[in-house]
Each structure stands twice: as structure tokens, then as C-alpha cells.
Image (cartoon, rainbow, N blue to C red; front, top):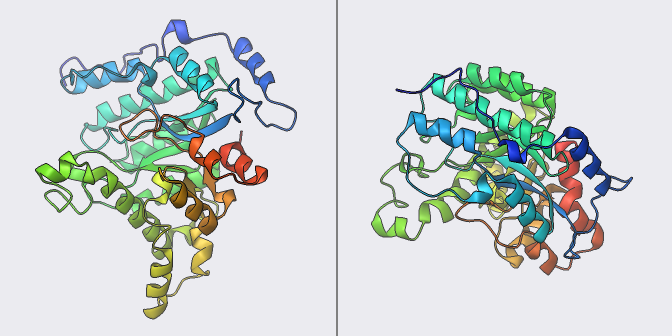
Length: 362
């Protein structure tokens, strides 16, 4: 903790990225009277990406005070908003929803550092949105190991410019913290604020699905990235199932939840789960398929057949664009997979931007 100064204030996005609000507001004229975004220079429809990552310079510098620097060269698209907007323009993306990646540090940093890091990343997001209000919104980051500190940061950021969601890990160290009574006030507050939960699994061996040293670990399993390609989908499927069987969705009927990575393996197991619950005579307040549609799902299937199945299972009104940009499993062409399906215009527009506009109250 040497050198860590909780009171330190650092410019979050850098002076060269910060422009006057009036200039950013003028850019909002790119939206038409109906609230739909104009076509991009590529001729493809501009989209709203609900699952993207970033790590602004101030956050990275503060993180280096808590742990030794990794020595890895950061991707400029993670922190350089000018470069990021150029990339978005070239790829038909109007807006990014900024969140940390699976490397979010909440499980291992001490509370004072966790609170400070959350404040830095959230303040950076406000600056990014203020500078470019038509390009960036964000999910609120919180030191989630302490429910009271997490709620305090949520309340500090509530209603601030560009804050449109809450970003949370599915679990940490195999602990399904979201369903513990201590976290009910946090979920209730998100529901009251109409902030959807943007979920994401955590990186790190201690968070491997099933626990450290399981069948997803080991040398060759890791070289094949099974903890991510299989572990993350299993993690999200488990989270979705527990939201249903724990009664959490019934307790918070207005709470919106976005499942990353197209819901993981959950959409493809809903028939089996429904059948199993019926055989066990497990009582639900509503038909199982209604709970399936309580979630939103991003488009990260990496496969047109899988994406078509997802849309047919949950409905085009429950699917939002997601890319994982800019992380190890991201996609180069954000809109391509949806475009390849040749959907009806109404369905395509919902997925590209309509659903996100409703979900994030844009």
C-alpha cells in the first residue's frame, strides 16, 4: 500500500480528450427526432454496444500503486478516446457502454483501495460521457466485496451524467454473493434507479468455474483457454438459473439483467432445466419461459446459427449488441454477425440500438 493516496485526484481521461459539453451536445444532432442514430459512413447501421471494456489512464496509474505494474503494454483503445471514437466510426458503432473487463480487481484489493479505484473509474466515465455524450455511457463500478461500500458508491454516482447501469461480477471465488441477504439493498437500489445489471465473470484461477484445480484448469486446458471459452458460459448459466430458483427475480420484478456472452450456455439448456424443475415439482411463481425473457442477452455467440437460435428462443426484443471490445475474446466487426442473419428490419434495429436505448434510458 506504500504510495497509495486515497485522496489523490487524477484527471480521468486526459485534457486532450476533454471537450466542452456544448460541443459534445451539438454532436447529439446526429440523432433524428425519433431517437434513432443516423447511418455510419460505412453505410451500415450505427449500433449501441452494451458489452465493451476500458481502462482509463488514471485508473491504471492508481492500480499500479496497489500492485506491481504488469509490464504489459496497454491497448490504446482502452484509454485513448480519440482513437476509440475513430475505431467506432470505422466499424459502424455509435455508442459504447464502458465497463471494466473480467480483470476487475474487487476481490483482491483492500477496501480503501477498492473504494478509491471505483471512484476513479466512475469519475472517468462521467468525464468521458460529458466530453462525448452521444458516444459513451457507462456501468457504475463498485467494490463489491463489501455490500455497504458498494451501495455507498452506487448512491454517490446515482443520476450522474452518463451513468446508465451497474456493472457487477457474477461471483467471486465461487461465492454467489448476489443472492446473499446482505446484497438485497444493493439490488433494490438498482431496481429503484432503473439501472440494469451488466454482469461479467471474473478472471483469475481462483475464480475458475467449479473452483481452482478443476477440469478447466491445468496446463493444456489453460493453453486452450477453457476457463474462458467454457467456464464463462457455465458461470453465466449458473447465475441466470439462480436468479430464477432463488426467487430473486420475483423479489425484484423491475430489475433488468444483461447476461454476457449471449447468456452463456443458459439459453441452450432452458428446455432441460424447465423439464427438470417440473419433474422435481419445483414451484415457481410464473411459467419458466417468462423468467427466461426477464433477462437481456448480448450477441456474443461468434456463430450465426447460435445467434439465430438465441433470437428465436428469447425474442429479438431481448437481445442487445455486445462485442467484448477491447479484450481477448472480442470481435473485429461488431455488426457483422447480426447483419449476416438477414433479419427483418424491425428485428435488426431492435438488436442494433432499439433495445439498448430502452434498457439504458437513452
